[in-house]
Amino acid sequence: MSKKPLLLFPIEIKAREFSARLFLAGLAVKAGYTVMIGRSKPLHRTLFKFPRGILVENDATPRSAQFFKKAQKMGYKIVAWDEESLVTLTDAIYAQLRVCPETLDLIEYFFCRGEGDKKAVDHAYPGHSEKLIAAGNPRLDILQPQWTGEIEDNKNRPITLLINSRFSIVNPYYISREKAFENVFKKFGIARDSDTGQHIDGWLSHAHKMFIAFAELTEKIAKAYPHYRIIIRPHPSENHGFWGNLAAKYDNCECLYEGAASDWFLRADCLIHNSCTTAIEAGLSGLPSYVYLPAGDNLYDAALPNSVSHKHYDSESLISALANVQKLSQPIREDYSLRTRGALKEHISNVEKVGSSAVILNHIQKIDWQKSRASYYIWRLYDAFRTTLSHTKNRLIDAVKKGKKLQEARKGYANQKYPGVTEQEIENLLRKFGYDDFAIHESKHEWFVITPKQH
Image (tube, rainbow, N blue to C red):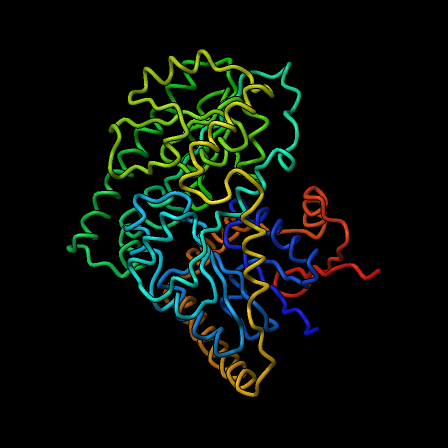
């Protein structure tokens, strides 16, 4: 029997994907694989420092094509799913902006949210149908009742509202809003005056209006219900200072980001959002949600999270509805989870069972792993030389042109998205998910190695 290849799981945003990717990694270890997991940036910047294996990537955007080409030349195989695919404006727009034929050419499999985005990608880029798999997302696997745990004792706590923000583009961490808008067009290579560019322009304008309206709503709720506890949870890429300053005005308000959003699903009584992915995750775990849509059912709003939420088109009706919020109970949780799964099953594969991770691992096991070749080592040496030269040049440019303040802002932004992981944290999560026979040790570059335990 040939040796199983190493699996590498890069993590971009810890709060969003770490737990789910570790769940899949644990399943792979159980099947006999050795896995590595850690911060994505060191892997993407210095791939030559990492051992060869199968890269389990978190998107297949046009920006990933150059890295994928390099990885393939160095002997890596690649599979991917898009962590942004759970919420899209339309599947056609998603396929145009978030996938490209170059990345599809370079990967073994691309795991889609469901049949809708799979068909859209297949239609946009014919000739890749055998690589497109409707799998769902491991983030939804870990929201099954056996993994989410029990409701915390809530008899002696106040009604708790979880308010989730999703305005990273219009409330950016350290750059201006105008610069963030420019970056959207650069990222996707879209001309602003094209039809798609005009649609994106409209979406950005709408998002800015929703941000202002959502902040105003949050303050109204804080004033209307001083006896409620209000937890504001900003997007991982947002300027958290804005929400922290808002929360500081009210004794019943807190801005908290630590951990995953799902940590609050059994400690809050409802979620309030505006077209946010978290509503899907909350609904699957059984937490009721309310969506604020002051512009009505707009073509710039994401339909899927809104479809599993109580819709309100003005602040008065939503605030009035919050008077009837009940503390989360097991009957409420079971009913809401069941209804959410029923509403999503036509759009997200494997949403009614723990199936996404199994589908992904099953296809990883089908990959034909090749023995090492001399060309892989040559490309690795070339990448080491080129990367070292490029990083030295960039550090000099940053020091001269951009200054210490910008460098510190970039570092702060990176640490907000990925504040680090400990060996104990990995072990605790794996055991929570029912995995026992494994060993962990810390590697270099903020990465960890997990191996099957030898008996």
